[in-house]
Image (cartoon, rainbow, N blue to C red; front, side, top):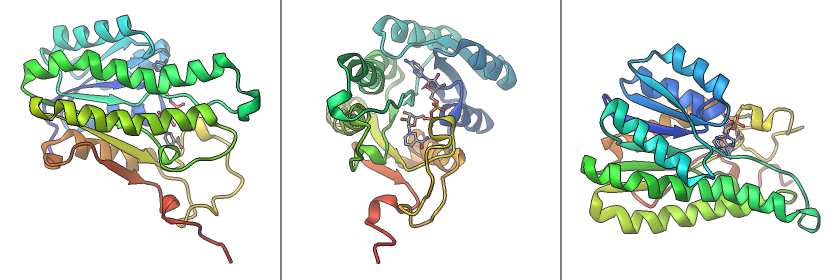
Length: 245
Ligand SMILES: NC(=O)c1ccc[n+]([C@@H]2O[C@H](COP(=O)([O-])OP(=O)(O)OC[C@H]3O[C@@H](n4cnc5c(N)ncnc54)[C@H](O)[C@@H]3O)[C@@H](O)[C@H]2O)c1
């Protein structure tokens, strides 16, 4: 599984799964452009990874102009763009009746709009590179619904659809687009959220490295015949209902 010398742009790379993916890509010989709104944490990670391998760029994924600058930064620093990981996301809680327009628009704007704007911005650079791989981080919330997070669910189902639309359009350009559906993963996003993991047959949280390995596989040429597909890593959560009796 080689990503050696590939240039990878990762959104939401300052912490959590995005930061782990950045470390894994660099350990495997890739160059990474980190994009996030958490500038301080992102800068510290870029320094840890070293300036030959990593660059930090302020990126609010909901802003098209930030995406233009991030792709340009990848071109200026590393000369090409091979991989985009649309990882940035936020989770907000409310029942539909209480969900404000602001919350709906913020979650959809970052989680789904961010993916769309990232894909659109990356196409010219990937065309110039002769192809590429785009990995969109959805969720098990893009495969089944839960109550209390309507905007998040809609955004993650939307990413799944956008992935397939982009895969069809971009296949002639040798650009592959796949979605990843993590279950409950040990990051700040879900810190203290679950009292029990009985809904997961493996009865545990996943670790960020269990998602990074999948993302590296999809970024590499080892997944060369996969596009528009859904890759699940959820400890069995979407199999059905464990512990029913
Ligand atoms: N942790 C889980 O259990 C889980 C499960 C399924 C899917 N996911 C998805 O995986 C992705 C990463 O989640 P995580 O658990 O690492 O979350 P996290 O909260 O630990 O990290 C998210 C990162 O995204 C950044 N971010 C937030 N808004 C942004 C914006 N507008 N522009 C750029 N960056 C922004 C944050 O600063 C942060 O660095 C998200 O899309 C999330 O929805 C997480």
